[in-house]
Each structure stands twice: as C-alpha cells, then as structure tokens.
Amino acid sequence: MSHAPYLQFSQIGKTFTRGAATTEVLKEVSLDIAKGEYISIIGHSGCGKSTLLNIVAGLTGATTGGVILDGREVNAPGPDRAVVFQNHSLLPWLTVYDNVRLAVDKVFSGKRSRAERDAWTLHNLELVQMTHAKDKRPAEISGGMKQRVGIARALAMEPKVLLLDEPFGALDALTRAHLQDSVMQIHATLGNTILMITHDVDEAVLLSDRIVMMTNGPSARIGEVLDVNLVRPRKRLDLVSNATYLKAREAVLKFLHERHRFVEAA
Amino acid sequence: MSVTALKEPPQTARRASAQVVRLAPARSSLSARFRAAGRWAAVNIIPPLVVTVLLLVLWEMLCASPTATLPSPSRIWAESKDLIVDPFFVAGPQDIGLGLRVMVSLQRVAVGFGLAAIVGVLLGAVIGQSVWAMRGLDPIFQMLRTVPPLAWLPLALAAFRDSNPSAIFVIFITAIWPVIINTAVGIRNIPQDYRNVAQVLRLNPLEFFWKIMLPSAAPYIFTGLRIGVGLSWLAIVAAEMLTGGVGIGFFIWDAWNSSRLPDIIVALVYIGVVGFVLDRLVAGISAIVTRGTASA
Image (cartoon, rainbow over all chains, first blue to last red; front, side, top):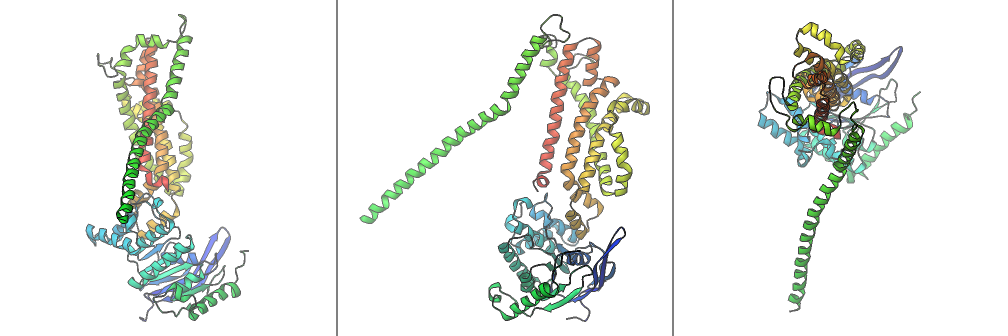
C-alpha cells in the first residue's frame, strides 16, 4: 500500500535479566505490517510471542530495536494499541456496559458529548452482539461472552492496531468458531489492522492475511512468513476442502512439527 | 358434528387443568412462606432465646444467696430498672440514660474511626503500591499495632492537653493498623490484568485509585475496617474510664466507684449490643459495596 509500513518491528530484541542469569527471549525480530492487514503470530509456547505482543502494546520495553506505529515510536501503553487479553480482563465490579464505557470515556472525554459516548458504547456492544447483556456483570455471563465484551472494549478505543493475545484460547471449540466468525466480520467491516497471537493452526490460516511463524526460544526469531492467499469473505465450511487452505495449513504444521519441533525447555 | 364434538372436550379440560394449576401454587406458596418464616425463626431466634433463658436461670441460682458478691438478674432488674426501661431519660447533667451515653461514645468512635479509615486506606494504598514504602514502614507498623490502646493515652493527654481529643486519638491509633495492613495487602493483590487494562487506557494515578484500586481492594479494605471498628469500640470504653466525661466507659467507672454493680452489668449489655450492631453494620455495607468483586 503506502511506502512506509503502517506498523513496523525493527530489530526487536528482548533479554530478561534475573540476578546473574540473562535469558535472550527474542532476537532481531523485524516485520512490516500494512494498514488493514490481519497478521497471526504462531509458535510453540515459550517462544516469546506473548512477549512480542507486550512489546507492541508497550507493556514491556524492548531491550534492543523498537516498534514504529504510523510514523511514531511506541514506548508506552496506549489506547491506539488496544489489547484483547486472553483472560478477558474485564473489571468484575462494573457491568458489561460500564466496562466498555470506561474505555470510551477515557479515550473520548472532551472530544465527544455524553450522549455520543453512550451511543458509541452501545454501538460497539452491538458489533459483538452483546447489547442484550449490557447490564450484567462479568460473573453473570459465559466465557465467550466475556471475550466478546473484551473485543468490544478494545474496538471502542478506535485503535490503530488491535492486539489479540490468544483471544480464544480459553474457550471451547464451538464458542471459539463463533467468535472467529465475529472477528472476521468485524475485520471485513471496519478494516482494522490486527495482530493476533495464537497456537491454533486452523485459526491462524482461517483468519490471517499472513502468518508469522516463530522459531523456538531462547533467542526466538521469525522463522518464516506465510502469505495466505484466500479470498475474503472466507467461509469455514468451504475451506475444508480448499487446496490453498490445506496447503497453507500443511506449511504451518510442517514448520511447527517438523523443522521446529517443540523441545522441552532445558 | 364430529369436529365440534372433538373440539369441546379439550377446551374444558384445558380450562379445568388451568384452574387447578392456578390454585395449587397460590395455596402452597402462602403456606410455604409461613413455613419458611417459621423455619427461619426456629433456626435463628429460638436457640439463642432458649440459651439466654437457661443462662439467666443458672445465674439467678448461683447469685441467689445473700452472701453472693455479684448481683443476680432479679436484683439487677429491681435496682437498675430505670436504666433498662428508658435508655434516653435526662434527669440532670450527669444523670442521663445509657442510650444517650452510648451516643456520646459513638460520636467519639465515629470521628476517630472515620479518620482512621481515611488515613488508613490512603497510607495502605501507598504501602501497597511502593515496594520501598513497604520495606520501610511495614516493620514499624507491625510493631506499633501490638501496642495496647491505653498505652497511647498518657502521650495523647500530654500532646492534646484535653480528654476528648485524647480519647479520639486512642480510637484512631487503635483502629488504623488493621485498615493500613489490610488495604496494603489488597492493593498488592490487584491482578496484573487490571493494571494492564489501566495502562492501556492510560488512567492517571487518581483515576487508577478510584476506578481500579478501591473497587479491587474493597473486600480487603472492608475486612480491615471491620476489625478496626471492633477494636475502636473496645478502646473507647477503656479510654473513657480514664478520661471521664459522659460516655458509657466513664459510666462503668463511676458506677464501680459508687458500688452500683447492677448498673455495670446493664452497661455491659449495652456495650455488647452496640458492638455487635457496629460489626453487622460494617459487614452489611461491605456486602453491598463489594457485590461485584466478591462474586468474581
């Protein structure tokens, strides 16, 4: 698209130091992401993919290199990089509506009127089909619903990039499929730039434009980047026998289980 | 013909069954409600009532002899009837009902405990947030909290040169430790997820305090407040014995000096009941405030 990438990882390295021991988690991770792209990062557990997401979110600092989003360096967390956490992270003392409203109020205070913020909150709940439960507390809704609200909260911040940290990992297979469809639909409607961490091969192939495969840690790098040339909108059932889908799936599986098989951490 | 013949019986049948269904639950729900109320009373009221009566009878028997050092229930009723029957009489500046005396003591507790709650939560928040404040202050607090309330009184009297602020200070210094310590623990236990959310939203420290810290730590804070209010009530009675005034504590001391033992026993009952009510009150507020957090 444009010449400068929208989101750029430039030589990201991360070392954790505990006492005398230092562990290099990430090494020279570089990637250019265009606006509106859906990128999945896949790898075995412990390969530093969550660390990478935290660095993009600004929750952890990179030891070397850095992240540039829309021409500006990322060095602190902010609502332009909204995160959907794996365990939903809704505030249990607030209702579904208030959880989203908190984000809306914080991001748009002074820019939009009270009525506009109310409408925007409801609009985002509508996007994830959660309007019916807006007055319930997180403890009263199911895990899938909580994750929907988490997504609504992130979307409501109008982020430049949406960061999904294994968003469907804790859900059962059927709920996960529903949510994947919702995310695909939202991506199609709003054209967000999305960065998703996952360990589910099917999920990665189904949702992504490109799949970033990480080698095993320590010193994890980007092993391979796979383009998924499937037309959108994608239909789960049609893809079951789609040759491109199967090939992409095979490529990821081979990467993960043949060339970079998971070895127990030493 | 056959169609209407078929049509009619189901209609009547439906109506009849509907009537039965409508009547049956109404009758059962009313009697069930009575039965539930009866069961509640049986479980919650009758056992303590029976035990109280038994204890009173035992007490009466033990203190029935004329040589008994402590008054029996019947003697208390005879000699302190005015205190039991009317808690709010005013017969002179120093001769007022126990209800009024309790109010005076409660006022002191309200001020002292209120200050302890505010200062305790703020200090606890600082200690919970900062590792260095924790390391520096925690040992000192752990030591100071074991100092008995009355040990502070001479210092307070020397500093304030007046009995009322001294009594309030004793309440404050007694109630503040559990509030500080529990708040600090509550703040330290705020899940990292909530902190991440706050960071992504860029909440400023004040917003973080009101929107994340307080609600998240509320169950801990209220545990501290509940312990604190109990300790305040313990301390006020002791402090008033020494500082004088019209509080319930001084009443006991005064009654002892004029050998009115029955009055002391009535005052003890008052203190017990008020302490119980205070505890229930804080527990009740806690249950309302922490509705969301507790269930999560």
